[in-house]
Length: 250
Image (cartoon, rainbow, N blue to C red; front, top):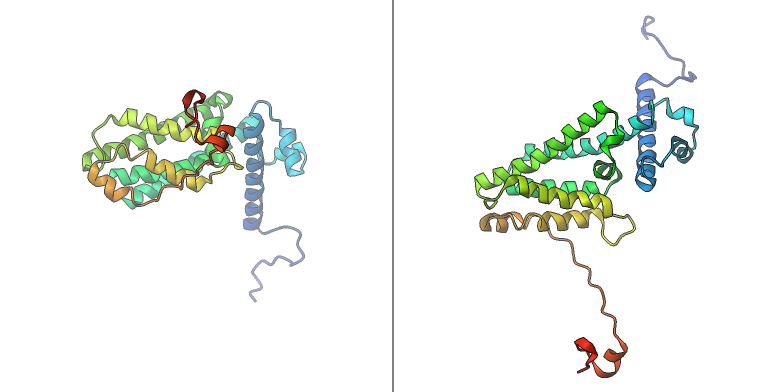
């Protein structure tokens, strides 16, 4: 062994630098996950850092090892959602394909993300609760996402996979439907994020698809199965058959 090489005793209580950084990153992410759940459940203004600390079984001062304050935690939760969307867009752009295919992939991925805590933070949190600088960054990110929807629609019109339409209005309609998932989705509901994404990817793009593009592109992802609600029989059904409007039986 080289006598000049520094050695660390195996009994050292200090973790190597990379291990310390990884442990810190994991703890920081744990704070964000606990915080975003609490903010979504109670609302950002009602939730407190004491409650975040209680969920993590740590003290409130310990949170300041990772974040300077509640508003910074809020921005980081929002940023996590924005980074997930950016990652999806980067992957779609690298894959190529006609505009309709790109749009459909983005709708599918975005719908799935809206059913996650960090994804929902993009639409459930009020940007006015952020510091001015962070609010500006958030607004810029929102514009970038909207511009991507418009770009894919315009590209589809140019390559013939999407019918002629106003890309701005079409993007608004699609984004509005997708963003609302973040408000109504519940984990204990009957549909999984994947099922919702499958269904929205078809329903929000089939009206835009040119006939040739529709046949080729819409088959890539199957639609989610529809759940049928059993019909309840009334007393009239049981005795005399189906009930006509106005209470007259057949």
